[in-house]
Length: 296
Image (cartoon, rainbow, N blue to C red; front, side):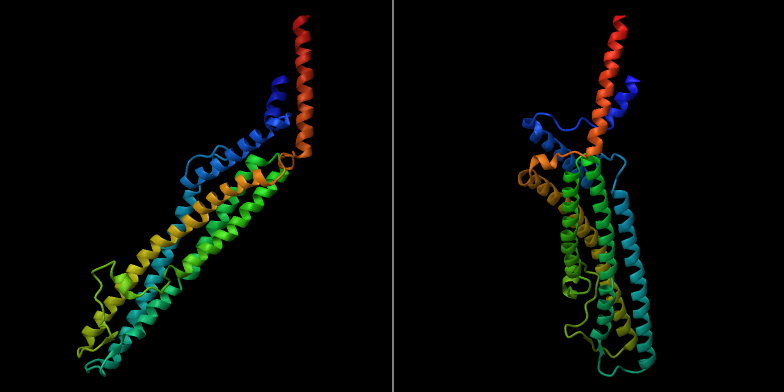
């Protein structure tokens, strides 16, 4: 009976110290344990409060899906370019070109296709942001479940940080590229792309060779852009919605200790307090009874 009471009592933790002089140390320890778990979350280490959670398997799955988005988009682009080239070939087969082929016509197809990746990138980011928010709230509930005021304030901070970092990440994804960087910037990353003439016009007399060169150039350009997005989109997401969110949360939790009444932060859930008190009273009675039995 005594062992069962102790086991049940262990589920409710010890509660804050009775001496007010020790409250700040107790609160500091509670918040430090929470923020250390949050930091471990960002590097894949096991957390004390929720040891079964590892976010990196979910991140890998989301980023693999992002790569699949890029592959699907690449196939769509290649099919579109090949269709346009075939149309040109049909129109000009066996004849000289009418002076030039306007490269910009094809370039717009490329940039439109890359621009279409913006929405799936932002969708992935928001899904991951929601997931990170849910895990951080789970951490907070595990660490602060006995202190409703502290838990509510922490949950509010987590949600506010989520909204802020989502907005920053979305802004970065919008300007990351998604079709806005110039060819010249991308060509510095590869010597394999054959540039068109500087006036963006092909001015050759052989239609077939001209169109093949154009198609090769645009496919190469898309391949480079796709590889860059495969790296940079996950980098932005991990930086903004994971690492910077946790760093900001750590700062906000330190401010919380300075800016709020410690008595309010450590106010316990009334039901938990009553249960703990009853269990302690029962434990005391059982120990006293055991001592009496030993003395008989």
